[in-house]
Image (tube, rainbow, N blue to C red; front, side, top):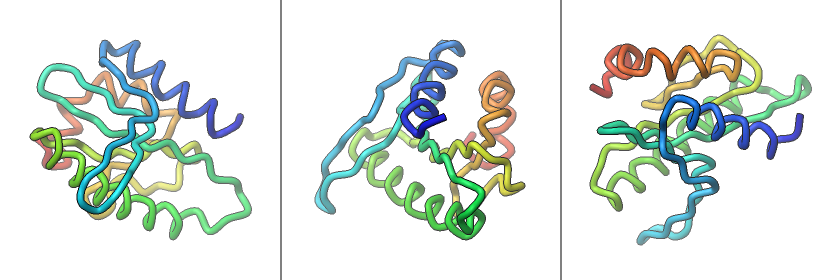
Length: 129
């Protein structure tokens, strides 16, 4: 699987759960341009998903934590622009047993369907509701 395929699958799965999606969503603020792989919205829920396809040859855990921090900051910027709280989520192709870091929810790709089916539970669990 290529990273582009992973992003497309994330978008498709969100749509299967009745989320309206925006793919490769670019925005600009006083700090410059930024991109969110998939923005998914349904009712009062606004998810910002960043898909990560790491190989087994990288320091995935430390890299995933760094990306979670950057994504959480990006989502704060996006929230300010749209006037609605965006939930930062990283979809990781490999499950590294990290599920929350610095305000960012980390969901293994294989668990995305279940996560979206139980979205209200997880958002409450991680303090977003």
